[in-house]
Length: 419
Image 1: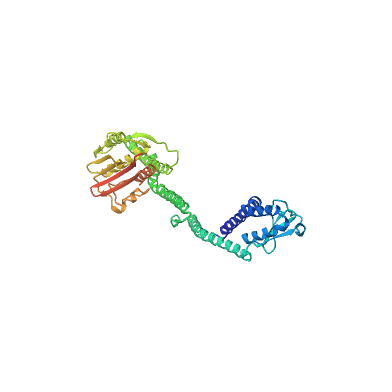
Image 2: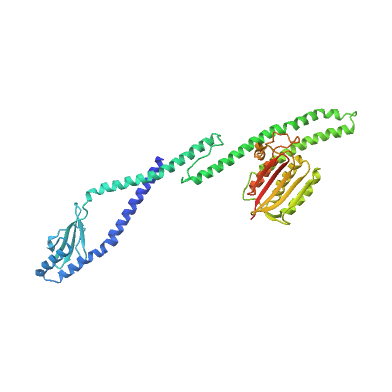
């Protein structure tokens, strides 16, 4: 704060001094000498020059009474000037002595008209005090302006230090009147994104270490048993079943890695996103026709419109709806309902199933990456990334995903804003 105060104070003080000196110089050199206040004196000097010396004194006394200024006519050789001063006809020579008394001299034929002395400033001895008071008040004003700014910057600095110490939940709290409020909001947004990335990295590390460990252990055990299955006494059916188990383990690892890569790729939301037009009704209908044979549970598609063209990323939209349908296929008992509608300039795609439902305390956690419900729903063997991918896709599309669940009815809804 001290450095900021000193630098700003010096800048403003030097600026005021420089501008004041420049304006005063311009005034003295270009304006003051041509001021209309000099016109009466010039007229009086011209009038006196046209009169004989015997009549000049009487006219001068009348002018003194009229203007209330001390005036006197002096012989031309009675005025002593320094080398830099010179009397010229038609011009006023102004002098100021050390007591701030002003005298003005005008040439009147062979005489000199002296006006003054006139006290320039009756409060000249207070000038230094006035100047000092001005700069003290200037410093006080700057201090009052800088103090909250310095306080907010200090607060932002402390939060940045805490954040640098791996306290990822550190956020800056600034009043709405703060001059660096936008900076604080930007910092909080950046901190939130960084903490989310770090949490995702932790979850990914845990998932890799736990989820891949089991199929890898099975593969190691299978490799150890592989020579025994190559012996002649083993039948072809045993060998095929053994190899199929190994393929399933490899597929499980491959599926997990694919899900991780998909989720990681959705973390970027840069300017390289390519938007395309797509008919959401056609996309949903084709998706339902492709996925329905994969499960014994029927999937019913109902659309309130015959065609709906939207601008976005069709592949990601399809992936989000697909994840919800395949998720419903794991838990539905009799049917799955897919509904497409438009309300209040928003597109809504809902996927509902009649499964056992999701506990209320878990309905928001299920969108977190690698989170799996404690309630074992049909012995689900997912990796906790399906709904996280849906949430990330909707965030990328400036939309949102919601869930409403109770026993016998679970409904996930996707919302997109219409252009």
